[in-house]
Length: 125
Image 1 (cartoon, rainbow, N blue to C red):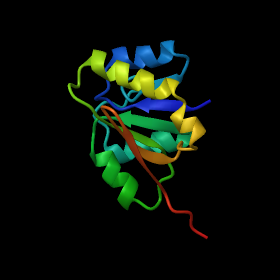
Image 2: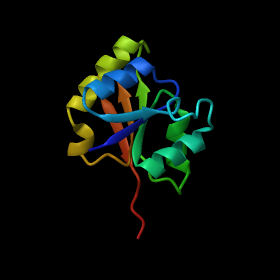
Image 3: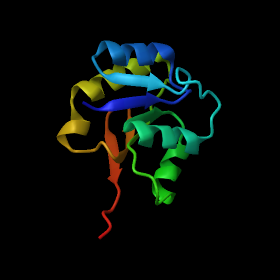
């Protein structure tokens, strides 16, 4: 089963909602890393094989430009960024099993209002 890591900009109520759906999720706050640099969050996600969920667009840049990372990232681009709206959009997306069905666990996913976009890393070798 896929595991998730909520960035500090994701509400604890969203983390709770994802848990109630049966997913394994923790947050950077729960593991004692509030205020940690993005690279440290990526490192934790890699160590624990977790997909990062965030509103922070910088993670998209890290995915594109850091050649040494092997992690999945979901960047939320939804408005309004309320807990209720975030929970509804994430619930719909996760229940659709898109990540599992399309093998996107190591992809960058931009989750928008009515669609998602993704970019997978090019395989080397």
